[in-house]
Length: 141
Image 1 (cartoon, rainbow, N blue to C red):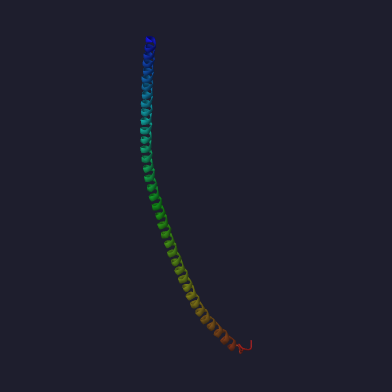
Image 2: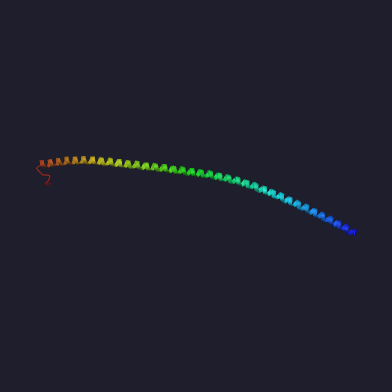
């Protein structure tokens, strides 16, 4: 019985040793996994911070680009409005020049017509007198 008790004691001691070794191994494995997870969590946290910073930078660049685009569009609209205004003014000026020129031409033509009528009346009268000098009546001819 002594051998059995000793054997049981050895088995119990070995079981306790195996249990202790197993606990130690599982504890090391748990701590390793916990360390790995802590590293992963930190890495993901750092990556999240970096991505947030990049997002903020991209959003700021987008706002800057939008402002620049809006300013450029506003400058284009202003330029177009200025050019349209100049075009309208030029059109008005050319219409005035055209009307003034036509009025002047009409006036010159009216003056020329009066001169021609006066000259034709004088010429007509001279021929009438010349015919009369020869004893002819202009109405008979």
